[in-house]
Amino acid sequence: MKLKVQSIHFDADRKLLDFVEEKIDKLNQFYEDIIDSEVFLRLDKSSDKENKITEIKINTPGKTMFASEQCKSFEEATDNAVEALRKQITKHKEKSRGM
Image (cartoon, rainbow, N blue to C red; front, side, top):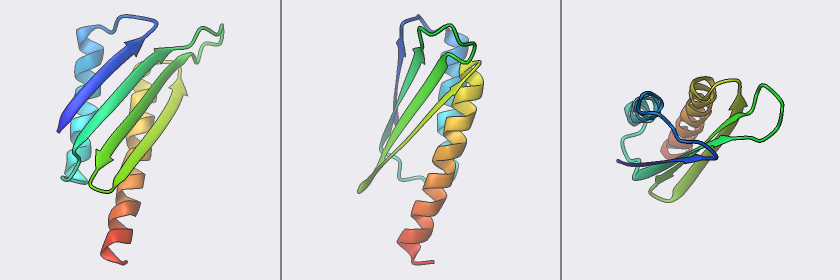
């Protein structure tokens, strides 16, 4: 699976990029047909403490799935977005199997 990570309005450090990559790789456990994924890490300009936004888009054969989360840290937002995608993947697999 190809992974593309973009940081918007800041420069992501290696530790954060490795964390995101590790979390995205775990999605392969649930669905091995993931073609590629794009992750957007965005720092919102608001004065709110929850100004870190993670958006994840994954492409599978015939379907694109997307999740976006806004939290106090990129790690928390990434965790929540990956969990939302895991639920979408599980639902998609159940539908495709006719359950």
